[in-house]
Amino acid sequence: MLDIEERLTLDERSSVDFVLSLRKRWSDTIYPALVEEFVATGADPATAGDADTALHDLPLYPWFSHLERVQQKMLWKIAGDAVIARREELLGQLEQAPAGPEGSLRLDPDLVLPDWYTDYDIHVQPGGVFSDDLSAYVYEFGARIVMLRDNDGYKFHQLFVTTALPELPEATRVVDLGCGFGKSTRPLKLRYPTAEVIGIDLAAPNLRLAHAESADAGIEVSYRQADARSTGLDADSCDVVTGTMLLHEMPASVIEETIAEAARIVKPGGTVAFLEFQPTGEALRDVTVVEHAERNNEPFFHDLFGSDLVALCARYGLTDARWTPFDERLEGMRPQGWGHRPEWHFPWAVLTATRPAEEN
Image 1 (cartoon, rainbow, N blue to C red):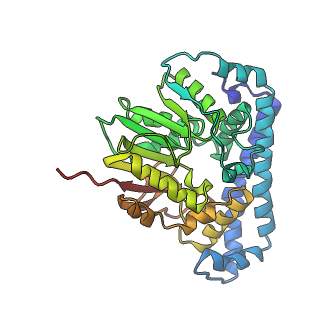
Image 2 (cartoon, rainbow, N blue to C red):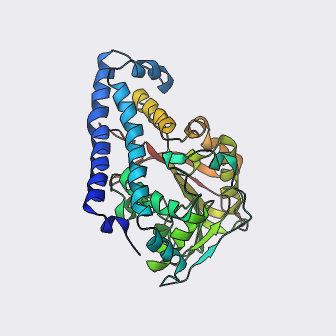
Image 3 (spheres, helix red, strand yellow):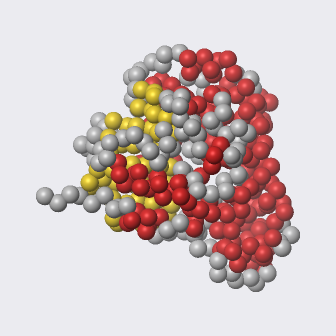
């Protein structure tokens, strides 16, 4: 299939490189300078809320805040223009019967998308990922830049499946909730090659692209359009239930319903794992993460940070629930903590829990 980045014109590539460089310098230069200003004030806040006022009084803060929002808008403008310029070729790919294993794609034309999903341009992507078939291509292209091109080949998601998920040679079914365009789903099939791997998402454009790219890569996955709160899967039918970067885009009540559904469909002895974000305990860093969510049109970060998901897991019959820091660069799961990182980064963490095995 067409890889847009391989076909960029010189002007397009220069624009991408500019935004990528801007994003890197915002993270590794401006943020550390902001920290220095903050430390110089002598402030010693106990919580992110306590750090908020001191942060806003820093001379560098308006630049830090403005540049984050501006670079995100620039990213989507560049990605959108690059995709639209190749509209016919990209749409044609979705219509052609892909080579390789067929897999499956099941869309639900009667599915009503919830308001909390459609009311916001999540990530500041105009129209979100559900409004047009091209929106999935825009999302895929933009996601590379957001991750500073460090997730090409799905390295990040490979780290998740290899360090956070168990080895299960006899797994028969694995489910990826909120699978998007398949970046988190295809690594699951590589991890569990004999299992039926199912990707579930609300957005039909995401699923069309995920199916086409999986089949083109020879990776057999079943994609279904459904709500993560109501998958339609049988109870006790999945060895592993995952979700990556899903819960922070849901209101608290929906997070709870999604945890309940994961607990319902996972087998006794099975694993539930969500790759998400959690506060680090470093007040300044945590308040910049909360404000990132606001500038990035992700209003439900507050719901995730304010929810006790470990307790929710217990409420729905899951045990051994815990959060573990996750380093997206090389290590993956990092029980010893995030460690010192001077640059701004997402506080990745994995929520894992198990369904108790049935007693004989």
